[in-house]
Image (cartoon, rainbow, N blue to C red; front, top):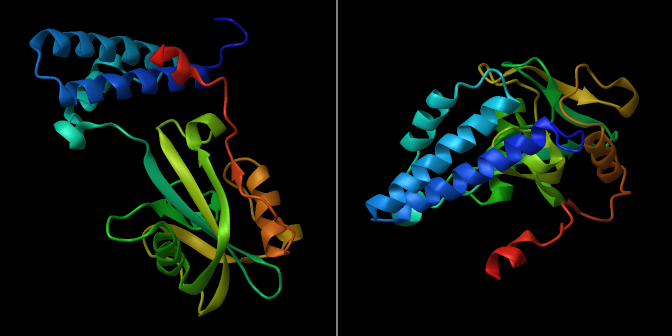
Length: 226
């Protein structure tokens, strides 16, 4: 493997190919095309397996095939994860310790149907910590795979919110602990990259001026259109 190609690159390419193939399977009625898309899924699973030794290609193909829908329901898109950086009057941040991994992070969860993104953020905060909050601004909107903190396609939306009431009470199943923390007394281990910590406290302290997002690359879709 070239030094310029990383395992994360392979995962990104594999998931992209798998998404194209599953979308094709969801829309086509041609047996010939279905066979070709299934072949693409097999190639994608082998790429994914090369990047992650814990992946069994045949099992992954079976899993992907089970996700195939029909028509619009079959159009594969990234999942949406929504989080909330919550600050208080003491410039502290609200963090939860994930029960599954033991790492600390701001409240976050998958988007729920029937709620707007900011409503999901507020709901997750209350469910995971017992704290009521109100939204202030969007903090970041990024591609999780491009940022390297996930191995499945997802868009991460994080809102900055202010606490307005409630009492600390962790979720009995999803979290092991929760609490307020100052910048110089953050718990360990923290999830993800240090950049979110800098952004979080910049917002809490009133220094955040821009939303973090993924900048455009070389516009690969233009080559496809040609």
